[in-house]
Amino acid sequence: MKEKHLPYFAVLDACETKECPICFLVKDGIERYFDNLLYENINDSGFRKKFRKNFGFCNYHSYKFLSYKDTLAISLTHRDLLIDIIHKLKTGDIRYPPRKNTNKCIVCELIKEVEERYISVIIEYLDDEEFKRKFLASEGLCIPHYESLLAKMKSPPKWLVDFNIKRYKEILSRVDRYIDSCNFSLGDKRPILADNEKLIAKQVIGTLFGFEGNPK
Ligand SMILES: [Zn+2]
Ligand SMILES: [Zn+2]
Image (cartoon, rainbow, N blue to C red; front, side, top):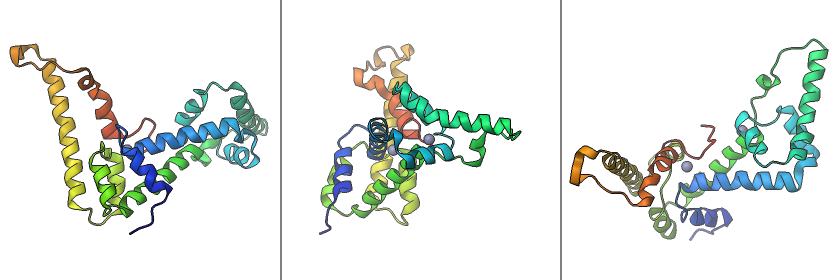
């Protein structure tokens, strides 16, 4: 029997959420990253150097940073970027933006790392009975994460392929049911939806595109 480590149990727990387990783990990783950044690492010289070199985060994660409403943290980290821009402009180097030379974002890099780590865990434990049971009871993978998993596997087990197709078909049926519920010409045949059935829009977007801010 394979030894089971923390990442394995993290995936098992994520299977109990009502969303793609990898999306859940990535979002959790991003929240932890910002928590650590704001509580401890804002003055860390390694972080500040890399942040300055990359010219901050990408557009999406700059606004994510802003959403924590920590004006001091934003000011401390972004004054470095303003200084660099002003210096460049003063020396006649107006090739703006400096981002052109980097296109790197620490948070986007973290996302890739977390995805790689947990997709590898899923692949490693596909034959494990406990894992399989939990996974089959989960929401399954969103399309981007299922694609990432398939890209890493030559031949995924049939149960996994069948399960994903079944999940996507279920979502399609829910979409159809929702559309029917809006169609008054159906008369008595028009389905009346329960409250949770009205949340389908979020599920469709989450399934097709993964978590909000997915750089893929
Ligand atoms: Zn996902
Ligand atoms: Zn980013």
